[in-house]
Length: 496
Image (cartoon, rainbow, N blue to C red; front, top):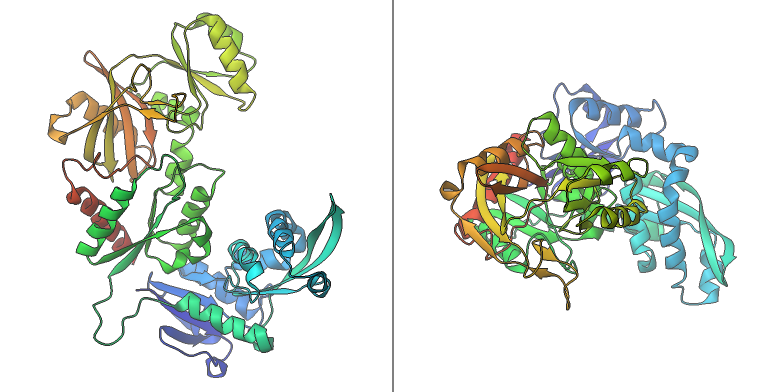
């Protein structure tokens, strides 16, 4: 499990000793000749974070050594320069206004109107500010924050609150409720599943699995998550599900497995970036999300690497008429960042293509026109770290030309599937799938391919492919999930 080391001006004055907490003086840390292990988190509690102070130099030194430290040198500058962080306050002010709307009385509003709200390790004393505290901790990544705010205006009869200032108090100056909050927050931040005497041996590692229980078509179904948890337990690894609100807790885990549909302007990408900052392995990693979620990028990648793919043209408002005239029909139109067959339409003639494309270009500067290739099913090859781990045939939805018919009555209608042993996959399909995944990275990818006679082509590469219990694991069963957990173990131990 991870260890937490607190950097202090004088460790003897730190009154919050406890299990799993170590201290070191700033002078001693700056004089070390080697970094801490990758399993160590540093919390900088020096009394001065100002530019070129000892606390600032500790953060700068940690980053040079590769130590994981909070706050970072960048965070210290960020919170110190109001003109920079002003841009980050929009979301915080919305949460603040929402919290203030839950006041118990008008008298409470008057008392709280000028603030401040103290945040310690992402926690606030008043439960109404719970979401604000988490978001502020995520934005500034400082152990202690004090948020000054005021009532700024009224909109439609409701008050709007603005943040005047965000400061970083010295932990020594905290008194009363704030000091109790600091100790509570510190306890939560350093807490680990340390067993009591006689309890079972603790897990070697803990993997966080990001899910959204409300997602209509998640990448992994409930059965798959249950099997992943069992596979982890069989290998001495704790697998624990987390949600969107757990970003501030990410450093508590050894690895992150994203099992939500990913997008760039979405919390899944922020989780991947945070994992990267914390130095913990992540699938899907941020680079893979960036590369796979945009079909314009994939089209250019396939062209550059000579990977067989359907004929593709990039359309904008200027070239639409020309491409429509030159295209063979039917043609498939795609929004660059669509997922699960959403934002994908088929045009059967020039007139229909122009009408559909104009509609799609209202929401995207670019769209793709792709050669239509009719097949009864698509191949999906699951590739982890450059090695195929499963292969499935996904059949077209009943009476439809796609795997998923989103326009079906009663909700999305999916075609059937057939899971195939890797050794029975046509060699041409395996070859193009591996070739397509290689320039993306070493994560977990689902490469969609078609076989037309003897010609194998790649349709796209998915950064978070479906892994459903009873589907992709139909042949390997529990072993598929153990393969994934073992790969996480390898990644974790390579970072140590």
